[in-house]
Image (cartoon, rainbow over all chains, first blue to last red; front, side):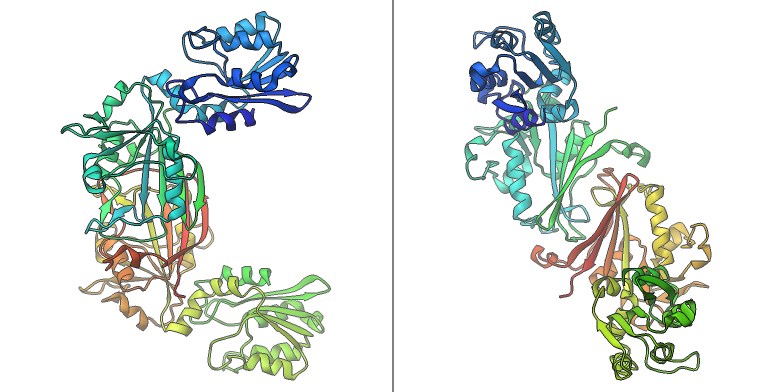
Length: 316
Length: 316
């Protein structure tokens, strides 16, 4: 299942509104087919993996990060039917599909055809890798990641506004990787005016993965940019599983105050700035007790001399 | 040598103005004597370890974190002479003693008596454990540690001033451990007035290790507290190897601006505060480039749900 999750995670940001699913077909302990959701959502991961495996899929074991779809579409057959036709003996599924057109029906149909189905292995990791799709299904909005790059003391610029650079090359390259994993990137009016950011993916080989761009502003829209008048308007974003909010401070604060941030990426440089611009401003906090038990560290790593900490909003 | 360093590190904050040395005597692969500098500085670690080993020290191997002293004192014989009299066959020393009364003479005298002397193993760790003594020898002032407890976004209080609690019990207990390792703790006038802090060590068994207290103020002294008119006055502090600066923001900034901080202890809680009081204010920075290459991460750990990061000033 780990291999399937890796395959699916690789195409995060490229499959919306479809989930970024990964699939491997295993026979006698060897992977004989690999698949992942193709850009735009089709073919599905199972179709690709079965095509990769060919006739060898008969009697083999399929591992899929999400329950195979049970609904036919003008764009292709249901994956459940493809698995049955291919004659696989067993299917392991990390997560059931919350899409009401499937939601358990794919699994039921497989079992009705005598295929052994196991549900749950790798569920946590699969859920993280498809957090965008799952959040859209559950909450009707994208999974929102807020990126903050700051000094040890939480500053993002000197009083003069100087902010280049706080973090180093490795951290900035990682931001570009996160951009490639998003369907849309959003900045505020201030950042747009100050930096006229390209918000593109500047990594060799995946430059064309640059996501759509959005602007949070009470003012006018900008050509080529999706306009959001408030953070709440993320509920109206079609075809966006993953939204990356890149700043600045006012935009970050607005999303936090609306409790519309699911994940924090904190890139921290080993420097002190002191007097300067804070990473975030007013977020509606009136008592310290309310600040606790909201964020859980789920990953951390060094990026050159900088550190990345990843926190997830704990909504339990 | 590791065992000797641990023994010496345990009494940091209790031996000033003497170094907190550790010593073990090893015979046939077994430790037969252990010693460390006693409170107030005497007996020395070697004297204690030799007494612990007794007659078995003859022909054994002594590991000491600092070169044995070569000068007699009214308070006891020179450790070099004690080692020679005890008949040890070999001595391994992590660091030579910068004290001009010894500074290589201890090692020379041991060698002159036919004792094999090895210098250098564990030098880095030994240097860290005796950083207070070594800084006093080299720079004529204590080793200064600045403690900061903050949110992910670098804040130490809400706009209302509410600051209890940002970090949890484990982190606060660790601060008390760091207090026990200091000879003196310093706060600013604001923190003194607001909190009337006891600055004592509230850990079972070592409550009496509470260090001397100092106040950074342009105003009047307070009974029982050493008064410093400016950070530069640390040069006049007698008998202080390790100084712990506990805040608040203005005091932290003053020490940073004076470049009189050797080590940062950053206790970070997984919370966001947003608008609030920054951990540090103006520290004299005018260009981002000047902020870089000053701080190196030397340790990090989890303390409950909080994190501790330890940075050392890179003066190379």
